[in-house]
Length: 215
Ligand code: HEC
Ligand code: HEC
Ligand code: HEC
Ligand code: HEC
Ligand code: HEC
Image (tube, rainbow, N blue to C red; front, side):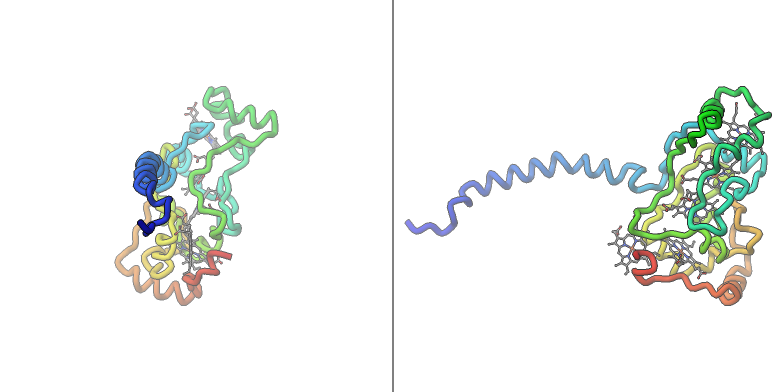
């Protein structure tokens, strides 16, 4: 009898079953991996080495974001403040608190505190804080109401689709410059008129071409 199928096909059903079993075993792991908050990102809330509260410092004490994230208007990165900034107050305030032990160790050793990064986009995409802030896009458009957060939580997906959604139509996100750090800002009644004027005055042109974000 002539062979229609080559020899290995005899085992094909076996490979198939093996393949299905392998996929079935790996799928839950992949689903868990990609859909757990760290990878869908929204809701990601890592534990920090110091129980630092934005709700207390930026909310109740009303410290301006730029007191600690000093470079956010001029630099690509907002960056987290060095230990010395905390010590401006904690030299005196709650100076013996157990919760500040890591801060005191950092000051005496000179080693920076190892804060855990919350918001993160991959290295193959570029993002610049200064450009956005100087165009009049406020912190809360991308980070939510940080002033009310005991622990920082990611509120936006930071996906490519999310970036592009605003780049196509930034109108509802443009503010007066004195509102940049107001984390409960909402667009007012004449927002569209304001945005049209702001886009012209500030020469705002959010890019949508690939190479602007992937260099
Ligand atoms: C007293 C200093 C201080 C002030 C004021 C402050 N922050 Fe922070 N911020 C920190 C520190 C320290 C961290 C790192 C620890 C953490 O994530 O809680 C941080 C983290 C963050 C993060 C997360 C960074 C990451 O890893 O992704 C965002 C976003 C942020 N701050 C926004 C703001 C905004 C918006 C304001 C003003 C409403 C503000 N901060 C005011 C000290 C401050
Ligand atoms: C402008 C002053 C000021 C600065 C700057 C400041 N804090 Fe505070 N912090 C306070 C005050 C006031 C309290 C409340 C103290 C109390 O409840 O007795 C506090 C409370 C705390 C507490 C809770 C202490 C406890 O025992 O309950 C921690 C932790 C803390 N701050 C961390 C930090 C860190 C980390 C930084 C730097 C990123 C920082 N603070 C910067 C004023 C400041
Ligand atoms: C248009 C969106 C957008 C705006 C507006 C924005 N951020 Fe961010 N922020 C991001 C993204 C995206 C990241 C992650 C950047 C990365 O991974 O390179 C980030 C990261 C951070 C970080 C972590 C450290 C760093 O520099 O990467 C801090 C702190 C922070 N932002 C604070 C602020 C503050 C304070 C404001 C307002 C003055 C602000 N951001 C406005 C999108 C934004
Ligand atoms: C809420 C609105 C908003 C979101 C969200 C946003 N952008 Fe933008 N982006 C703007 C605006 C407005 C400009 C235009 C600035 C100008 O023309 O002066 C801009 C400009 C830019 C530019 C051109 C300037 C430069 O840095 O070269 C890049 C690149 C960019 N954005 C990347 C991103 C990325 C990456 C994300 C997502 C992680 C993002 N943006 C999310 C509003 C936004
Ligand atoms: C406004 C900024 C921006 C523009 C414009 C942009 N991208 Fe992206 N892109 C991103 C960001 C941010 C990510 C990372 C998303 C994430 O981590 O989920 C990304 C991710 C990707 C990825 C990885 C897969 C994925 O979807 O996460 C590919 C491929 C990609 N971009 C291709 C392109 C191409 C092709 C274009 C032009 C048609 C383009 N991008 C335009 C910001 C941009």
